[in-house]
Amino acid sequence: MSGDALRLALVAGEASGDLLASLLLAGVRRRWPDLQAAGIGGPRMAAQGFDAWWPHERLSVFGYVDAFSRLPELLRIRRQLAERLLQERPAAFIGVDAPDFNFGLETRLRAGGIKTLHFVCPSIWAWRGERVKKLSEAADHVLCLFPFEPELLQRHGVAASYVGHPLADVIPLEPPRAASRAALGLADGDTVVALLPGSRRSEIRHIAPLILAAAALMFRQRRELRFVMPVVPGLRGLVDPLLGQLAPGVPVELLDGRSHEALAACDVTLVASGTATLEAALFKRPMVICYRLAWLNWQRMKRMRYQPWVGLPNILSREFVVPELIQDDATPEALAREALAWLDNRPRVEAVERRFAELHQLLRQDTAQRAADAIAQVLAA
Image (tube, rainbow, N blue to C red):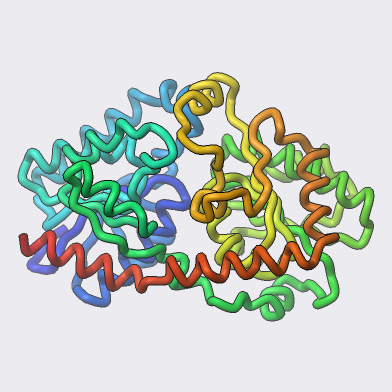
């Protein structure tokens, strides 16, 4: 990081953070074409000219057990990054999600005189509400994805702006179903199920077996079904053996990424809880949300949650518009049953498509422009 151009530092963990940060960088660069940005990120951010000092995979953890075992490594990375940023003095630091890593880093940088923003309000409205105190100490300003969050934060003295969700800007209001099917080699009349088990190695271990076993049960009942399964590049070696063991003979096409094409093309999706559920909603797709954690992680999360919903489409709708099968309820038989139920009920599908269209309009706010405006205000303060 050098010269007179605007210099920002960012940290994004995991594939979802890499995607959100890349969309943010694209918008910020429109306002400041000579932008220099560095820190921790992934390939999507690198495509926007981001200089990744560490890859975002280094921050990827799955629950408390995994986080505890990797704590020394994560603390070492955070300490080294803080020391480098305090020396290089970027105009601002933007922590993209990953609150357990970013809050401590932001607090130290803010104490050192560097302006800090946090992009994605942590889900304090869903669980672990005590994190708002840490957030108030860490961030000069929070960029919120959902419209109810700024008022909640402001009640706790945290400056915040609603910027909408960048995925709502890049995903078209009318899903490109025909084009996506053609790109994936699927016929217009095919009945297509998208399998999205998650982007982490641990999710492939915990959730992919459930989803593949469910696909095998569905195919046993309906031989006309076709399946597509986006896989993060580098993880296919974990998926191939599972496919052979759990779904032999089932027509599952593994895709290198291309999750948006899979969602646009499918009739229903089995999807792990997380950002992918919101993507599925923006593509107006009926879904069955599932998730499974290690037992200790689940016991801790169950005690700390404030509301009955886990999936973002249900949280934003404030009701169960799509089924959720979590932990012991997430069995292959239940997943298959709920997915086939969508295929047999066209009026129900049309109703959820209308709900998701309304949600898309709510979140479509030109996030890049709003975020750039908020960043400019923080820099000028």
